[in-house]
Length: 295
View 1 (tube, rainbow, N blue to C red):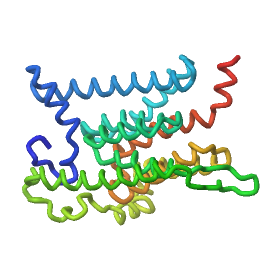
View 2 (view 1 turned 180 degrees about the vertical axis):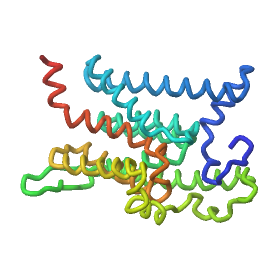
View 3 (view 1 turned 90 degrees about the vertical axis):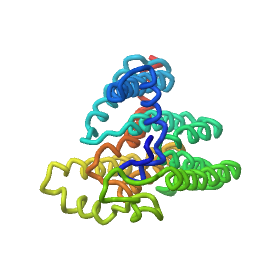
View 4 (view 1 turned 45 degrees about the horizontal axis):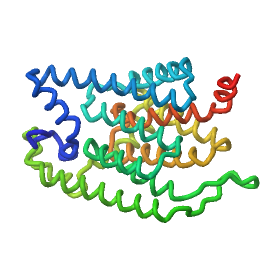
């Protein structure tokens, strides 16, 4: 990315993490060691930020916060892949802040600020903009229906989210086209096959892997993970409150994007889902947590 010659065009807009490594190297540390320092600092920051946010969420329940940090750490280890890029580390931090902000009902300004910072790291920040569109609507449970009543409650959020979504897509496209020179892989050249959209379209490969290819492979765990997550969410659907519905929509959009643009067996791309799983599970047990905290 720093040389404008990544493997794929789709990597070129992911600048924050590589430049962070470069910044560390300016202290006289060889680039390879600067990369190791970056990963250590990123994982440390991810853990501390999560712990602090959990303390806030659980009203300073230290033992429960530690328990959920351990739970998150096991999930983080579980998604490790042979490839784990620098932007993956920062993406987890941004999505921890993102998912926490959803259930804490943070202000529009909070999400706008988070969006602009996260966008310099990876285009997945567009999910934050999309959330503002979703957050413009009110979701109310109905006694006579399994599904909530939905009505527009904030035109300002709808406009803000729509504008940020458009800006995020345009920014990603323009930065890629402007900065990208040529692929570091000689056989790819200018990566012309991905110039129009910028991302790989991988739906056929993912459907084949999901429904047949993974059945006789250890990769079946990946298919079961996605199935299990969706089943768990649907099983909890009748207990949803307003923020749960909104988070559910973002989770499903992330899963859809994985099928469209990612590879379901490249488990590192599950990283944005992990904070949502953690806070969703925590929210579903909120009544028990509040009862124990009061006691």
